[in-house]
Image 1 (cartoon, rainbow, N blue to C red):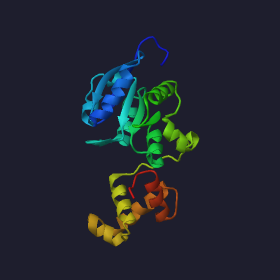
Image 2 (tube, rainbow, N blue to C red):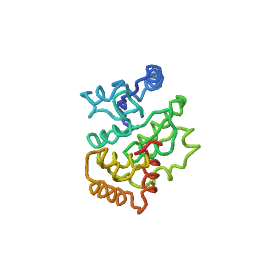
Image 3 (cartoon, rainbow, N blue to C red):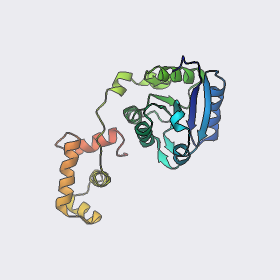
Length: 215
């Protein structure tokens, strides 16, 4: 895609004007790139009529009306050919893993310089995993890419997992959620199965590691 005659169409999604301005200057300063949209919310991005014609989305991890990790997954389902690169101030391994697992082609720290950003964009367009220099220095690409699949949890399972993580017993959870203790035990067994473990503490730790639960 980088070698095509036409320009690469780029969209920026971030709610900080200075960040948008910085990435905007890098994109507009390169003759092979074309900025075709800049948005500060999930809603305005998803309402963008030309999203299916976009080549690359630079997506912030935290937006006022949504989680960039989940948005990435949603975008890849609806627009599988769009390349998504995360942009963030956060460098936690679990977050980077989730973005890559959800279909992102790269992860850029907002502190990256112009050349680092352009190098990452070029690598992503060539089908490579693109990490900014600081991320690459701290993490092994193979380690980040070859990770366990994130279990798909229902909202109820997430609720119960959170309460279990708080140390609550099945009877307490049942009372709080207005369901039977047997239903709680059934969900607990399902959680153990999805996390491939027989120990709920291990399941909770795994959920924290991959970002389903916050510490």
